[in-house]
Image (cartoon, rainbow, N blue to C red; front, top):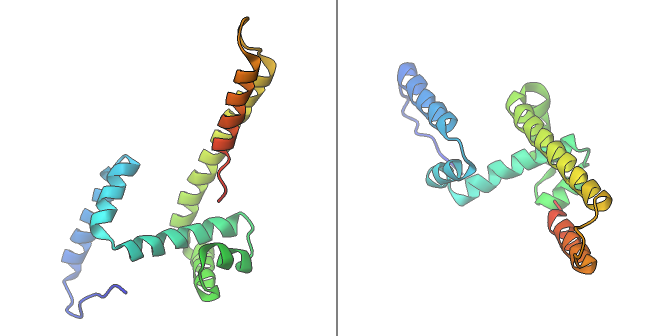
Length: 148
């Protein structure tokens, strides 16, 4: 568990270091850059804990019940309840992140569905081995289906 020093810092210093932290995060543009920073700042346990909280909020939005969340993520009911309360009463950060994830999922699904439609409607070029084409399409679909 993380511990904060009992020695207080001035409000001005606290405001400045938090601003530095938020600015540092906001300037990172790729998943790899963010991952590198968080690997330096957080322990593996802290990263997992934060990831589980976000996953709990995501699963609550998707309509999962407590036992399902508990079974998949191995978290306690009080943890789920705490995330649910934070999400309901002050969860602007949760909502922003989850809305972006859902929007990205919908766009990805749209393009995948469009790709499937084209594969079914537009035949391969003349002289193409249809068996090989269908086998590759099947493999591609299997790779895209990732369980949560």
